Image 1 (cartoon, rainbow, N blue to C red):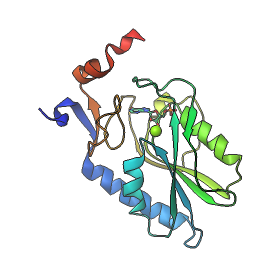
Image 2 (spheres, protein in one colour; image 1 turned 90 degrees about the horizontal axis):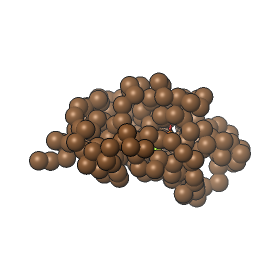
Image 3 (cartoon, protein in one colour; image 1 turned 180 degrees about the vertical axis):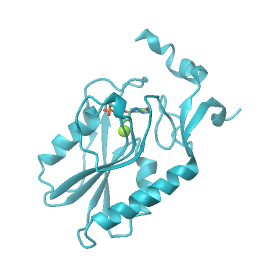
Length: 190
Ligand code: IMP
Ligand code: MG
């Protein structure tokens, strides 16, 4: 029994993830001016693995920085008020900023972050998200770069967690009902 047995199906394989990240890195490298010293902002914790692979595919000099939000509450549904848990070290006034996110679901987290960052007057502000669940969108947020559109399923792996675990899976998968039950109890309970 390994962690892989807790995955009911794989939605995006490791090979497909890495191939798409090469494309995203090339697109970002082409779109950002080589001397513009862009800042890649990783939204913790979910985007840590994506940032790490993505920035290795970006061929222009850049900086990285980190922010953390909390909203999720640990269940399967990303409801609730977004709170800022960790802010940037960098001053982004006049900077070209790329927000690196794991998944845009309802859009509440990105909506909150974009409003917050816009107030600091960056030269440009773009979102690069690995995953997108368009069917769940409640906030109309602009997504400049999207790795994969996925159906409305709760996913784990490649940074995304269930009860803070399974982030280390090298692919994007759907947890088995038994794992969901074991970690979260009956999700219908609310
Ligand atoms: P949003 O505010 O509804 O767009 O939710 C975004 C956040 O909820 C993401 O940054 C994730 O941390 C979390 N989230 C949304 N969907 C999933 C999922 O399928 N698996 C794991 N985390 C998710
Ligand atoms: Mg996230």
